[in-house]
Length: 193
Image 1 (cartoon, rainbow, N blue to C red):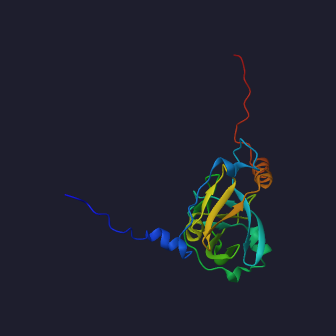
Image 2 (image 1 turned 90 degrees about the horizontal axis):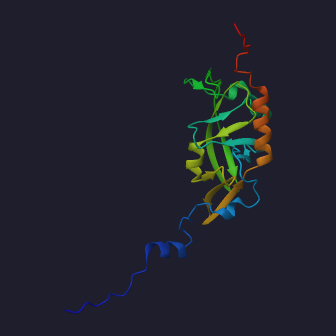
């Protein structure tokens, strides 16, 4: 019995790549750590364009399920209370406190030529960040983020684009949050009886 090879049919991925339609592979390597301070435990804090304004101190939090906006940014974007729509669920803050949202607002987040509409939950609470962008935005953009590499990558126009974190700003935000936190340790004195 002999086996004849049939002419190879072009692989679908190759034909898509030739047409510029293939999705690039997203990932991180040690090379992506160049330019960062290592080792570190810094959050991924970036600058993005929201509602037509460049906004600094955005926390990229892939563990969060909703995008959060804090009062300073809401006022800075010149938004008014009547711009909000109702949001009925309660949220839990980093300190474990229940937070009642003021409402929600839909705004565009732009990264290079990509624009994703996002529903921000507006809360009246302190944060060293202006906003938290979370899984809904990351997933809509097709992005992956790495705090270790201080980058976020996403596919756009057949290429891999990057948003680079600002470690200095991340550290300033951490210092601000720590200095504002009330002492949780009770003051006690030891007495010998």
